[in-house]
Amino acid sequence: MIPQTNPKATYLEQKPAIDAAIRRVLDSGWYVGGEEVAAFEAEFAAWSGSRHAVAVASGTDALIVALRGLGVGPGDAVITVSHTAVATVAAIELTGATPVLVDVDHYWTLDPERLEALLANWPAEAPKAKALIPVHLYGQPAAMPALQAIADRHGLAVLEDNSQAHGAMLGGRMVGRWGKVAAYSLYPTKNLGAIGDGGIITTDDDALAEIMRALREYGWRQRYISDIAGMNSRLDPLQAAILRTKLTSLDHDTARRQAVAARYTEGLAGLAGLALPAVRDGAVPAWHQYVIDAGARRDALQAALREAGIGTLVHYPVPVHLQPAYKGRIVLGPGGLPRTEAAAGSILSLPMFPQLADADVAAVIAAVRRIWG
Image 1 (cartoon, rainbow, N blue to C red):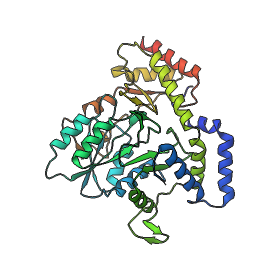
Image 2 (cartoon, rainbow, N blue to C red):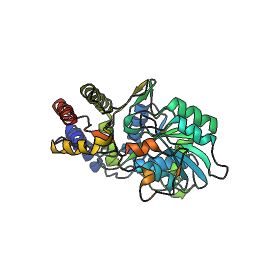
Image 3 (cartoon, rainbow, N blue to C red):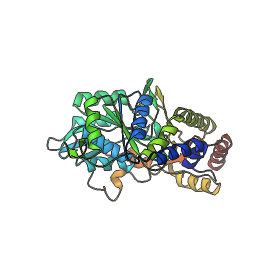
Image 4 (tube, one colour):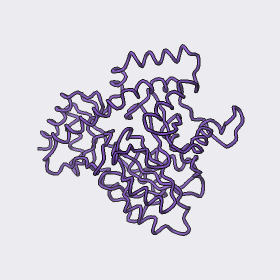
């Protein structure tokens, strides 16, 4: 069986170094915060080119802490997409703010034209739009120059959801370096994944970084004294030590993802009715996922690949605004979300992880071509 993703393969590839990092933490006697977390933050900040990195317990918490650091709360609206992991929208509501969802473009990221139309017709009685969360979905950079320009005109703070795009580039600039702040998930299947949960936030803003560090630990600036109302969201030293090890190979792993994606694109070209991932001009995706659009044949293709021993997944089968917890109560942008709703029935994620062997990539290509006919 060729799995769609395989976080254990990353561990096995770096097993001696990861095991040594774990032993180092266990032997240290320091199990919350401390030098390992501080070192990971410094190393991640350097890797991303940011002044600050603030580690937290999950990618969801990274979004919550970043939003709260920006002053987002009850009475505010935050604009994002529905074609995303539910965490993006859940984080907005967990701050007390109101999510407003717009449709995606054909790169599966937030559509600047739909955003402009939404802001041009913002109801006077609606909560004030305070922040914008572009999601670099599947490792594909969103249209940041256009989105940032629109946000600047309308006074919106930009928080990039970079959970699937560690190391992606746009116009020679790393994603996560466009907005005021960026949030990353470190979930095991992510491009940089812990062996457990984790998240991290980057920013160049000194004051914002200080606020976020306080927010993640009860609002403490001085131990046991809460200057502001905070929360408990700490990355533990075990995960920090593992992530420090994995960070050393992240660029190499990204290059391998890019090589796999290039082989898929070359090998699957020319199949009528099968749409391969579009890449924006000037973009270098991080290829968290390689997502094809199989139209009405998606379910049949997925079933046939499963029979052939090839794992696939649908990211995501139900848009957030149509899920039971959110359906009928989430504000949508003008024109609704037709691309988002169509995608749920047609997209399919092929196997994608850095340790995917060339022979397995070739087997996936051959199987898709044989099944597609």
